[in-house]
Image (cartoon, rainbow, N blue to C red; front, side, top):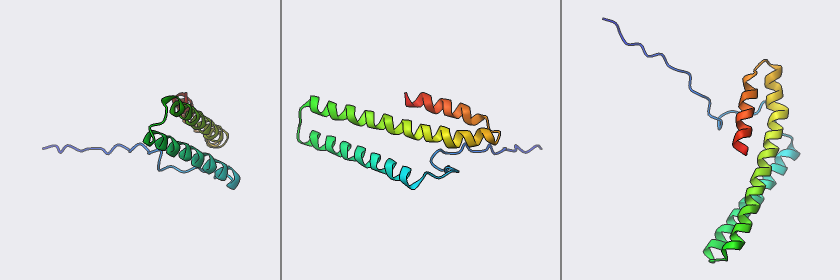
Length: 109
């Protein structure tokens, strides 16, 4: 009688578990944290505006500001990714990192 053997497939790495090989500088890390904190403040401000039943147009203006800030934050992270992770991957013969970068760019649109 044959036994059904299940071959374990390698699990896809979660993006939340990987780490950069080249760490960000303290200055870059601080600048990114400041940007995030500003966006969190803007989001909290929008929440307060909703709680206060503020005018829709004012909330939409704040929404546009947060969207723009998020987009710019993403571009900064993408630029860093291209200059470090992608370059390192290509130098090490990992050309799949280029395809990954293209997919990440598509998600940022």
